[in-house]
Amino acid sequence: MFIHRTFRSLLGYPCSWKPCIGGLARRPFIPFRNFSSDDSAPLPFKYVPIDEVEDLENYQAGGYHPILIGDVLQSRYRVIHKLGYGAYSTTWLCRDYQSSTYVAVKVGTAESNNREVDILNYLNESSPPDHPGSSMAMIPSIKDVFVLHGPNGTHPCYVTTLAKCSVSSAKGGSYKRIFQATTARSLIVQLVLAVEYIHRKGVVHGDLHVGNILLCLPADFDHLSIEGVYEIYSSPVLEQVSRLDGQPLDPGVPSSVVAPIWLGKASEKFTPSESRVLVILERHTDP
Image: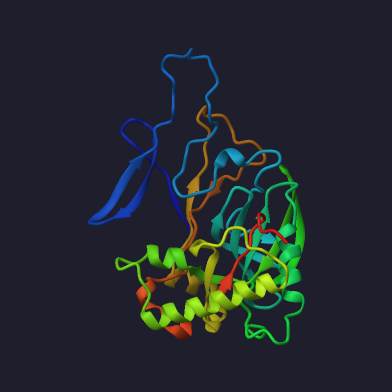
């Protein structure tokens, strides 16, 4: 079940409702306006800002591909939620109809390169047999590669391992912001092995931080139905996209967007057996 949120403040501006201690808090969005300028001057932004989503201004030629909840990509991957976004991509939680599993589908901005795919494939090709981490899948595997053609251009896409959350978000979801000592030791050992393996393969991770260290999902996650995922975690909350000038949306802009789902839990609740590491590498990683 999807939830549509469209509220108006007393001033007539769109506003969002966010959970807070004691209930819901309204956060009105007041569009920027330079009152010293001529009223006929164009607005600096096209779209009414929405919290916790990608930059709507990047839905343009060369930018993001418009994706809606319920879309089916490549006649195979059903989009059920958003996992995240960055300057060069959006990432989606999808159900793979062929394998009956959940996967992460990363959709790049138009004409962006697939260098991440090349690096991840290289790291997964073969492991040094004498490496202690050779049998540990600490690097996400590429399951599929394809392109999407849309109003904003041609977008490289790849399908990879779905993770529970990053170490950073697990700490952010906790008042204590710490892991159990045994869990922390397990994470450190795995991270050292993963980085040493990456270096042995001749690759340097250019941006290693707790946001790029992921924790794996349990194997039984794939047994959940889509409705089960929504019930345990959260249903997509659709935020309607609108222009500041009231004009219709451009063809390359989605009619609605969603804030990312969080599949994680507080850091102190992770046990060592639940703390298998995945190290992600992004486009600035150097071979």
